[in-house]
Amino acid sequence: MSKTMLIDAAHAEETRVAIVDGRQVEEFDFESRARRQLRGNIYLAKVTRVEPSLQAAFVEYGGNRHGFLAFNEIHPDYYQIPVADREAIMAEAHDDADEDDLGRESDDADSDGKLADEERLKRRLMRRYKIQDVIKRRQILLVQVVKDERGAKGAALTTWLSLAGRYCVLMPNTGKGGGISRKITNTSDRRRLKSAAAALKVPQGMGLIIRTAGAKRTRAEIKRDYEYLLRLWETIRELTLRSNAPAMIHEEENLVRRAVRDMYDKDFDGIQVEGVEGFKQARDFMRVLMPSQAKKIHLYQGSRPLFASNGIEEVLTQIHQPVVPLKSGGYLVINQTEALVAIDVNSGRATKERNVEATATKTNMEAAVEAARQLRLRDLAGLIVIDFI
Figure 1 (tube, rainbow, N blue to C red):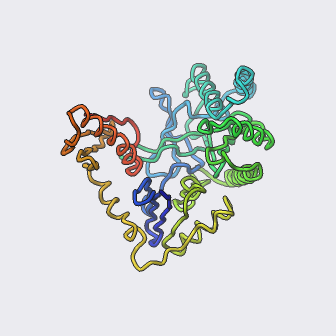
Figure 2: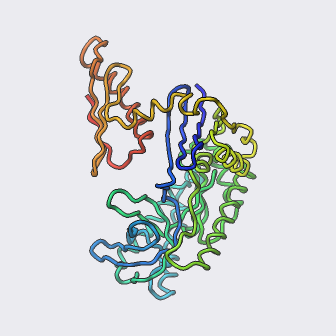
Figure 3: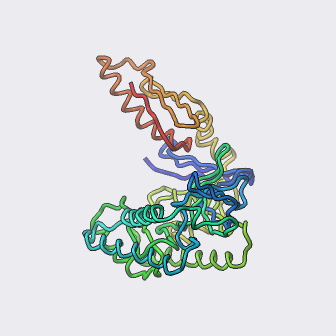
């Protein structure tokens, strides 16, 4: 079947994106003017309270509520300790990373290695220091939102920054060198990409991960994406120096641009966009990221709305319902609570198989696939509990 991206940007108040495989909706996302996504945004923030019992700080960054910053999400550059001590900590971390690199096969160096180095450093810092000893009230920090506000909870923040491009992720204050996404499993691709990453000469103190989307990309394409991220980081630095906390420093791309960057694949048949402004955004951003793919973006001008003409509205109505029917006659019941997402699998009218065991197996197999699809469509995460038959 052929995949297509549909973007409904006809109304300025709301933008919706769906990935359609044949007639089935595989992914869905939306963004409204009233409730924009905060995740990925970077802010210059001020510490309002240090909480020793939680080993965390609450910071004012400009959101509706104060953000939550765990101690292990604070970079040692912000510690109120002698410079020599801070340099010694970072040197130890780099020495450990070098020893690990020597112990690894060259083809196995990947993004997991980089993340493991970072986690090891965080654990060491937490053993050596307490947040109340190194972070002070009214201290200024550059933070990034990693989890949006939800219910009565404020946004979760980090000072370990990352900037995502189409093929790369730049980590301006993390580690050294670069890594390859572990999802890229082809040995020759990994070797070629590792060579391409080494040729970029990533500045000391920065890290770079080549994303799965970069698996078949050329050196020139990887380099262009990396240089775009470097320019973006330089802009962020300059704006930070001119700003007073609390202030937004960098806003993550809007949904149209994020969809082009993160959801689009060159194997897609194309992108249909309803709305002239959204079409221009998608086309212009594609020309920057993947110029050869810009011709696949088309302005939808049908008499019926784009989502209605492709049967998307019907699917969107269903994702707000707790009961999801299965083709075999069974059904799922999806309930979201504060603690977890519960999915109950029921056989319903599924009685075509020879015996109870065969019916249960077939229904469970179908339910597993549909449950994963529903989690994507409904944007559900966290603890997922599925009660199979």
